[in-house]
Structure formats: structure tokens, C-alpha cells
Length: 232
Ligand SMILES: NC(=O)c1ccc[n+]([C@@H]2O[C@H](COP(=O)([O-])OP(=O)(O)OC[C@H]3O[C@@H](n4cnc5c(N)ncnc54)[C@H](OP(=O)(O)O)[C@@H]3O)[C@@H](O)[C@H]2O)c1
Image (cartoon, rainbow, N blue to C red; front, side, top):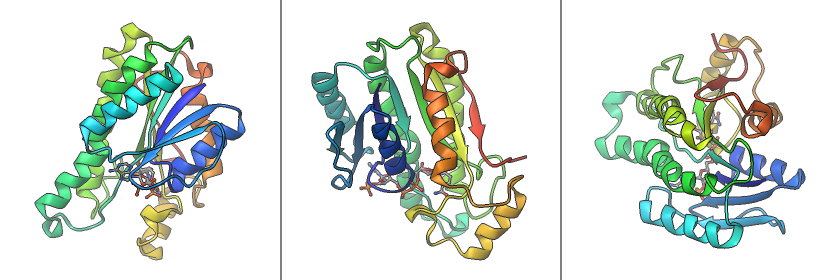
């Protein structure tokens, strides 16, 4: 498969890229800063995904080098953990620019490359969070931006169905990454207690469901966001 994964410099995106590379797939990754993966099947684009023109240029380059895409994983994301009264307008808009508008723009451009896929069920996978179903206090803007992504997943799955492109999401509980390193331990522990499996989610827990959702094994699954860890 040719897979585009956004936000591959660190964290979950990097782990996913390394997983798919180890399985023999070609991975195109991107982030604002330079690559941290060195592999013959890996191509990195230094792109700020809030720049719609930069997404278009990246997709033109992918078309020239790879011809098509079989899967797109919209993983890049940023968070702010603050009371909404303490979240300035420009911070809120920046979060939506990365977490929602970049995903929308990336889907619009990559759908053209997914249409050229030889796979019987090319797929988009969007990364969401338990902050949506649990409506976590202190995460209003972050969870609202991801709620918008979950709605995008549902609507887009219908709009791309005629092209045979599936659109799904994966909802993650806390995982140790740069994104969560400033969250106080007691806050993380309280979230873990609410999960059905009360331990911290690891990248090893994530790769299997992600691989399933972008592979032909889930060819009749679309419009769903799958939550890990038991989030009810
Ligand atoms: N960690 C968790 O507990 C958790 C839980 C639920 C959901 N999630 C979701 O999982 C996804 C990955 O998070 P993570 O924990 O792996 O975070 P992370 O380690 O901070 O990684 C985020 C990645 O996105 C890239 N990025 C950020 N802004 C960008 C932009 N404007 N343009 C291009 N790339 C950009 C970063 O690279 P550069 O800095 O080089 O741009 C980095 O590679 C996010 O969508 C997050 O909301 C995480």
C-alpha cells in the first residue's frame, strides 16, 4: 500500500509510520519540522498543514512520485488543556486550523489520489479522542475540534461512497506522547479509572485497529469512529 500519514515526526504518527514501513508498505509522512524516520520506503514533506496551498503542493508531489494513495491517516493534531475562559480566540482558532480545517483540506486533496488507487477499498482514517464522548472539562476547544472531525467522518463517508472510498475514525484514550506530557499525572489516572481497561493505551494497542481500518479487511466499514480501551 501507499499510505500518507500526517504528523509523523513524533508520537503516534511516527509509531504508525514505522509499523507500516516494517510491514513493507510505502509511507509518505509530513510535519512542520524535518523527518525523524530514515527508511528507503519513507518520504517526508515539511508542511504546515494549516496552509491549504502547502497541502496541494504535497499532493502534487505524491502524485508525481507515487501516482496514487491507498490510505490516508489524518493523525497530526494539537491540544490545549485550559478552561475556555482562559483560552484566547487566536488559540482556539489555531486548534481548529490544525485539528479540523487541515483534515478537511487534506481529505479534499487526497481523495483525488485515493480515487486512483488499485485497492478495492481505499480508506481515510481520522484520529479522534475520548475527550469527545466524555466532554472533558478543560478541553472544550480541543474536543469540539475533534467532534467536528467525527462529524466530518460520518458525512464524508457518504459523500465519498460513490468513489468507493471509506472514511472512518479511531478514538484514542491517553497515550504517553509530547501531547500529554504536560497533563498532570492525577488527571491521567482519573481518566484511566474511567476506561474499561484501566491501564495506559500504548502504540502497540493502536497499530492493529488502525491497520484493520485502512485495510481491505474492513472493506464494508465506513462512517464509524472506533474507540479503544472501553469508553462507555
Ligand atoms: N497522546 C494522546 O494521549 C492522544 C489521545 C487522543 C488522541 N490523540 C490524537 O492523536 C494524534 C497524534 O497525537 P500525538 O499524541 O502523537 O501528538 P504529538 O506527539 O504532539 O504529534 C503530533 C504530530 O503532528 C505534527 N503537527 C502538529 N501540528 C502540525 C501542523 N500544523 N502541520 C503539520 N504537522 C503538524 C507534529 O510535528 P511538527 O511539530 O514537526 O509539526 C507531530 O509530528 C492527534 O490528533 C491527537 O489529538 C492523542
